[in-house]
Every structure is written in C-alpha cells, then in structure tokens.
Amino acid sequence: MKPMKRVAVIVVAVMAAIAIGGIAWASIPGPDGVIHGCYKTSNPATGSVIVIDHTASCPSGFAPLNWNQTGPQGPQGPSGVLGFYTISDERTGTSTGNIGSATLCNIGDVATGAGIHIYEHGQMDVQSLEPSPTDSRTLTWQVWLYAAPTSWRVSLQCADVTP
Image (cartoon, rainbow, N blue to C red; front, side):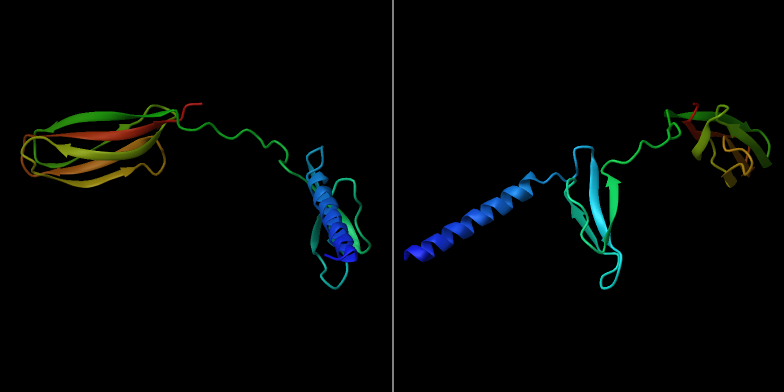
C-alpha cells in the first residue's frame, strides 16, 4: 500500500473511532433523566424532532422540547378484587306455578355470575336469572314449576371488592 493511501486509511479509521466514541459518550437521556430534543419551527419539515445530548443546544430554526423518561407518579388507583366466593340458595317448590326471589352477595360486593341446578324431578323452566338493575350485589330469578315437589339450588358468584 502506498504511504499516502495508508495515511488516508488511518485518518479515516481514527475519525470513525472518534465519532463512535462520541456517540457512545453522549448522554441520552441526561443524568437528570430528561430527554433533550428540538423541534423544527419553520418550513421545510416544520415539527420535525431531533434528540440531542443534554450538553448541546438546538440548531438555528429549532426550539427546545424536553421530556422525562419515566414521567411523574400518577394517583393511586382503586383497589382490585380481593377474592371470589359463591352464595348458594337451596329451594324446594311444593306447588306448581311461578316462584321468584333474589339472592344477595355481601354488602359492598358485586355479583359476577349465577346458575340454577335442578335436583329432583327437573320439571321446571328458568324464566329469568339476571342482575338487579339497581343493586350490583343482587341476583333476581324466577322459575316456573310444572311438577311438585321440585328442588333446586341457585348459585351466585360474588367478587369481594370491600376496600
């Protein structure tokens, strides 16, 4: 390799090492956790954003725009569900016809699901099994008995959301 070409290769290699070292040394985000940037304030490319080192300043035609890497602490959220439990309501109908009632979760808790299991004879229709529109802890239900006696169990799944 000719001496002049060798010098040019060495100079290029040294410049590349300095550039790579400078990029690695740059502190983004800065030591205070802030990301420093600039946005273009005029055409062309108005609104374009560049990120800069915390020691640099914005070039001409750009305005500073800084933000936190993690952001401020938000307010405490509501407590979640503490657990689930089932309330069972055993019933026996001794005469035919319409029977209805309500099954309740504990005060302050929320009904999350329900079901009816028929034990004896099985000659009944479930007409409704739904949450109360005015009380989130209440399940209302209605059955129609075709034969008596018929026994059934209403099960209500509840979420314990007591604070």
